Length: 186
Image (cartoon, rainbow, N blue to C red):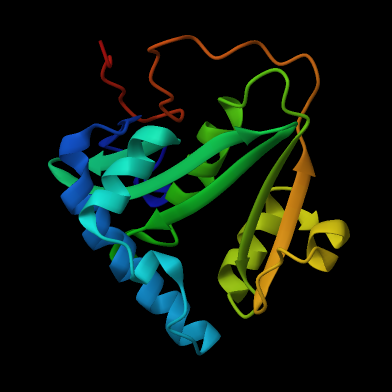
């Protein structure tokens, strides 16, 4: 891996409660950019407390990425029926454009349970950079979710099929992208 792809010196591991304060700061930093792009402050990620982040960090399968001691990225996912619901993909603004978001997305998709048939997510309708990333990763507009009463105005629901026959994720294994270091969680 080259330095340009952003993975050199990266450590990807599962969330620990001690990550919550930095994750809250990173989340706010990233979602301020989303608020500006989408011309709204009505974004839940901007209004969550430290306890909210700690709670979802433990309830969802949450990955964090560190470069040295600094938390520079994260993503979360959970099983909802046959869907692997992906959310809160975030990369520190000074780290963006190096492939870290793409790698975190691939890492969390690879951890989908065998019963999940598709990955789903949503993003701001005017978040053009996010929409390009997700399109390159194989996501398409989920027309059914777009018409759902639960659809949030100003967002785009996306989905992609997950490959059948995936092996179950190893318990306790860290999901390091290629070129990134992983530290055991046990």
